[in-house]
Length: 318
Image (cartoon, rainbow, N blue to C red; front, side, top):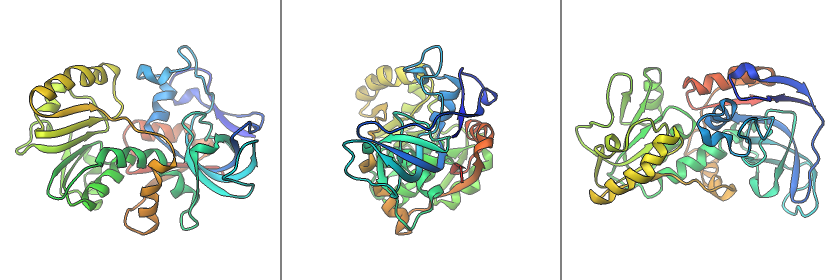
């Protein structure tokens, strides 16, 4: 089968298309004919080996030679112990444990997958899992009338988070680069900020929730953006920033009646299928900016890694 592989951390030029053996499913695993895999920022991080946590399992060289976790495809074979799927089923999920989505075939744990709704294309289904889980977790507890700021709101998770917060009745501010301001407005953002010209940590009126999908600002700066009893959650970012949020941020948060921490996102279909249901019902839009072919994976990763994507980017193999 054809697969995009890499043997060392580095730029997109480290990737190449190669012919490799088709994997076989073992106990509790499913073999998929992959039709679509969406690109996540975690793919960019694992390609470059930075931040340092992206090297977990492979400090000097990648533990998995093929990236791509958010997959959608058709079941081609099942291993022993699989009970929820059979050959021919159309499925999707976040295969974060094994990755391998930038290929014609991939194996995934049964527990990572869900049945694909027939109303969604494979590309749309692949755009959901990881981004939806982050957005759902990050906006949990938002109430009508609250002020919510989402930093990195023009990407995959951010585009879902804007819509979820608006559905809850919040006033939503989206932060991203100047090229995404109109896109964030189209998703329902009440206010948009170009991070290149304005500092979101110095608002005229503080926020009840800051969901930081970039996490490049200090704990002290982020704290001043919060209203009393406000919450700040960050996802990803440099290790130094994450450690500061978990330690200094936690302390100053408690001292000032605010909560600050790193968002822990659980895995599994139950954590992303609620957004799928909203998408099927037409209550949430699934925005795919661009699609790339398997030979174009380096360009797809660069497009996402450089912050150019409006919503999601998908790699198709058919």
